[in-house]
Length: 91
Image 1: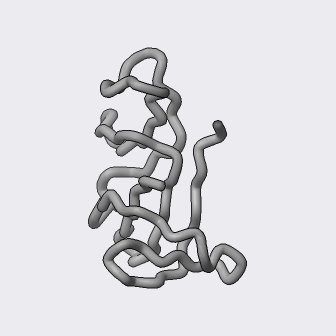
Image 2: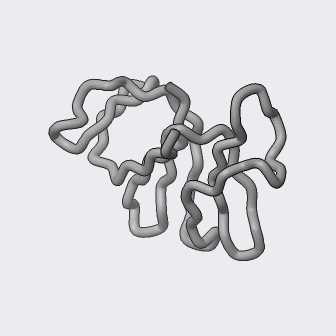
Image 3: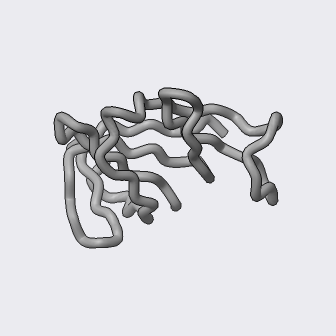
């Protein structure tokens, strides 16, 4: 399942899954679900989460493993296991 892992200035880690893309909108970086078969962010896209761009240190697209949900951690493809705040796009 594709997702984005965001590291914020205070070193908090956020994971947003169920989204396809992100873009800067003024002072915010916004994550979108674009819909089946759509490649572009357009008027049919759904905003899922936004973060103040000045607080974002890194954004990485990752594949999430489904284990670890109960203990509030995720294992990502690069092998790291991190406590995260998880955002999920409603389907």
